Structures are given as structure tokens and as C-alpha cells.
Image (tube, rainbow, N blue to C red; front, side, top):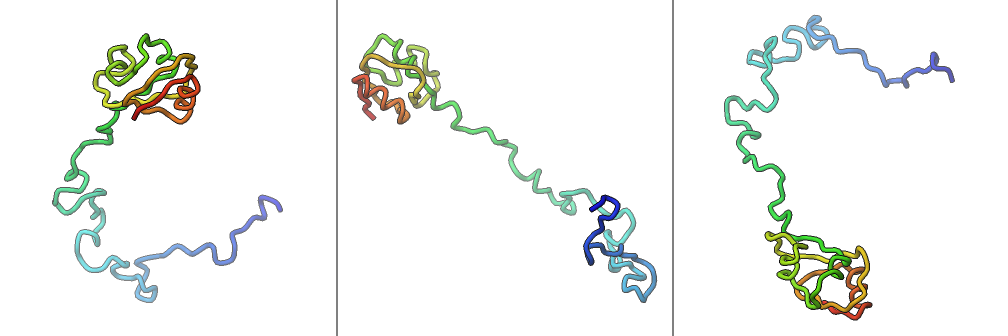
Amino acid sequence: MELNTIQAGVGAKHAKRRVGRGIGSGLGKTAGRGHKGQKSRAGGFHKVGFEGGQMPLQRRLPKRGFKSLSAGKTCEVRLSDLAALPVDEIDLLALKQAGLATIQALSAKVILSGKIERAIKLRGVAATAGARAAIEAAGGSIVE
């Protein structure tokens, strides 16, 4: 096969519709635009989204954007950060006082990052499956 021998399949190409070329073509006189009105005239199209003077949809909807209202309410805490804390019983208040959780945080979750060697007790703090296994392997416990 050569580039200069490539052809479209039979019936794939259609002749361009020639409007306004007499009554026998089926698209003579008004050329398929109907009678009168804005859309029948040359240059008679309005912008996209125009609704005839009615307030368009994109202006009727509130401009809130897509900012999540719950973003930043849960913070992640590493296992290695918990190992550095001097207390054995850890809850959200202890994490906030240590600076590991933001003041606005409503919940915290421990992730498996680093190691923990001593037994700690988590109270009211969630943990991933890997972090839970590491804490329990070190002799600690998690109270939901």
C-alpha cells in the first residue's frame, strides 16, 4: 500500500449540499432556512447560551465554585510523630497541643509512615489498617 493510492471507502464521502440552487434541488428559494425570523437571515445568530433575553443558566446558578466545605477537617498523623510524643494515651486534644493536628481539625487519622517501638493507646483517633497493625504489634491499643 502506498500513500498515494489510499482512498476513502465507497460511500464514505458525500457531495457537499448546495443550497439555493433552484427548485429542483429541494433546497432552493429559502435554502432550508424556513420563512422569516432571526435564524433565516444572514448574520442572524446569537451567542452561545443566549436565551432570548431571559437570564441565562450560567448566570442564574450561584458562583460557589468547587471548594470542598469539609476539606481540612481531618488531618493525617504519621506513626513516627506518635512515637516522638511523650504521652502514652493520645487523643485529638493531645495531637493539637503537640502541634501535629491543626486547631480547626475535627478528626485525625494515623497513617503507616515510620516505626513505633513503644505501646501507646489511641482514643478517638482513626488509624489505617497498616498503622493499626503496627500499633498493636508494639503492644498498643486503639479505642474508637
